[in-house]
Every structure is written in structure tokens, then in C-alpha cells.
Image 1 (spheres, each protein chain N blue to C red):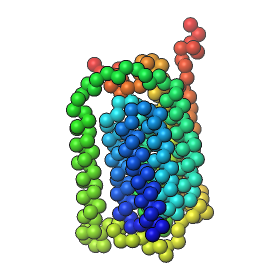
Image 2: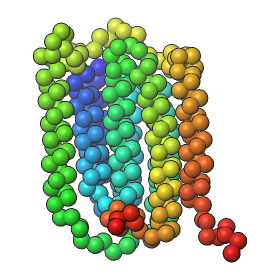
Image 3: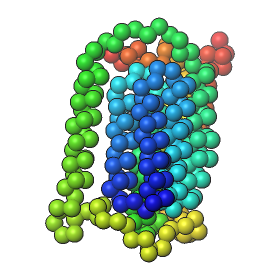
Image 4: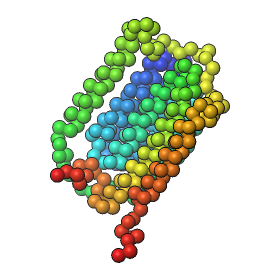
Length: 100
Length: 177
């Protein structure tokens, strides 16, 4: 396998791209997809260290993170559908119900 | 040789399609590029000898979560008029903050060898003689050591399912009035 630093920098790159997506995109669906990308980048790290130390705990945690991402996506998309039904928009700029 | 070729191939595909994902205007294109990224990450998992996670990533992420995303994209009307950005500096500030974060973490990784003791173990090559964890060990660990978190995860998924149904239900139609 390659040296661990390669994987760490790959994971860092994916994480940063996900961060840029969360902060700059106005469409809430794309923001949710960027969050999935961030969680995925974290999984690479967990699997990498699981491989290095020969311990399956990292892979178990990665499994839990995948389950968590599934739950988060389901609830988030449900919220988006409910919001779209009320306000007819999915743009983050238009979501200002709590703005006084 | 083959190892490094596979790593650079999967990493290149992952990073390139992730970058395309956050920059494309069309949301369906974003979803497709995210699927490509997730598949490339699955390849990285396989290279790290995490076979079970490789399969789980493809079945659960690409087959489950992304289909859900595409359903919602189809359900929601996206051709609403795009207004001007209200906060024009947003992109600049976002890139600045992300750049600072990236430099910070990259600096830590670069300096990791100089830490006291042996330093972080990231620059040397991993020892290949260690037994690679396989699916059987993963299952044994999941159902013995991590049994309670496993059950809690199932409860979490149940709660999320009920929550998603309640959120997306049409309340107006169910009103008796």
C-alpha cells in the first residue's frame, strides 16, 4: 500500500472540497450532498488507521458513520420536502423564517 | 507499482469529481458526480483491504442514499429564478476560511514527524505483514465488543425513518377541516 500520508492528504482534500460546498452553495440539497462527502472523507481516515494498526475497530466506526449518514440524509431530505411544501423554495437564502 | 497506479487513479477520480460536484450548476449533475466520488472512495476502501466496507459503501451509499437524493431532486422544483447573491463576499470569505483550515491541517501533517517520541505514524510505510482485517473479524467485533452501539444504531435508523415519514407527510390533506 501507499504511505499513510497519501491517504491522509486525499482525505484532507475531499474534506476541504466538502467544506467549500457547504459554505458556498445556496441549494440545500447540494449542501446535504457536501455533508455526505465530508463524512466519506472521514471514513477514509478511519479505514486507513484500521489497516495500519491491524485493528477492526476503525472499520466498525466507519460502519456506524455510514449508518449515521443514512439517517441524516433521510431526515434532512424529509425536512427539505416539508419546507418546499410551505415556502416553494430550496435555496438557503430564502430560508429566513427565524429572521426578525 | 500496481498499488500506486490504483491509488492515484481512484484518488484522482475522487478529487476531480468532488470538485466538479461543488461547482456544477445542475443539481442532477452534482448528484451523479457525488456518485462517482463515492465509487472511487469504495475503490480506496478495497485497496485498504476493507472488503466489507467496500460492499457496504456501494450498496448503501450509491444504491440507497443517492437514490433518495435523486428522488428528492426530482420531487422539488428547481427552476426557481436565481436571484443575485445577497452577500457578495460570501465566496471569497468561504475560500479564505477553507484555505486557512487546509493549511492548518496540512501543516500539522507535514510537521508530524518532528513530534516528540516517534511522532505521528504517517510518513513511514505501513507494515504489510500485519494481518489485514477481514469481514469475519469485523462481524465478530461488531457483534461482541460493539453490540450495544450496534443496537443503538438500529434504534437511530428506526427513529430517522419515522421522522422522515412524519416530516414529508402532507399535513394539509390529513386535516379534518
